Length: 69
Image (cartoon, rainbow, N blue to C red):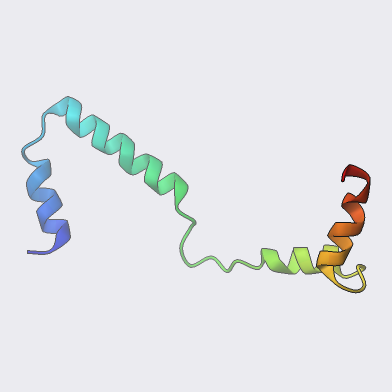
């Protein structure tokens, strides 16, 4: 028996309020998951923003934090 079939079998045993909670959980899960089949090229924006920084990125961060240390 597949996982989907097992879950469907268990859903048949739930009351209406319990089913409403399950539906709510499913909606939350769908909101948290990244959309499928969408190319994630956000790294290109990061690379563009950081292209002006020369040298080591870790050294740049250290230098920027010297006033807070």
